[in-house]
Length: 132
Image: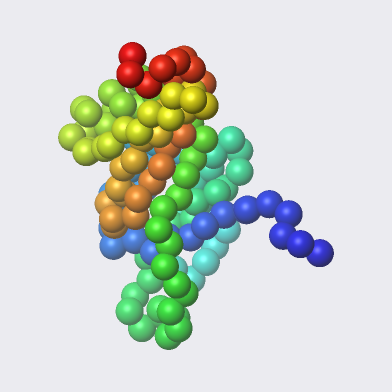
C-alpha cells in the first residue's frame, strides 16, 4: 500500500522553548497533548493534527546514523497581513515571493535552528499582470 498522507515531521532543537515559541507564537501552531517519552519535547498541532514534533535529546541519546537533509517545510497559511505583522514585530527576517499567475503569496522564514519554512497564502494575490 502506498503512503497515504504525511502525519508529522520531527525536529531536534537546540532550545525547545525558543523553537516552540517560534512555531506557536509566530506561525500559529498550538502545543498540545504529547504522550510520555524518555526525552523532553512538544507536539505542535495544526488544524487539530500534531504535525510538528519537537524534541531535545542529549548527545549520547542521538541516533548514530544520519537521517538525511531536509531543505524546507511548507504550510498552507491564512491571514498574510497578521502573519507578516507578527514577524516584523518579532524582528524575524523573511522574504516574499509573488506568483501572480496562480494568486499565491509565498513567505520564506527560518526557524531558530535555521530550517527554512515556507508559508503559502493561496488567493492572497489577485491574478494580474506581474508588472502591476
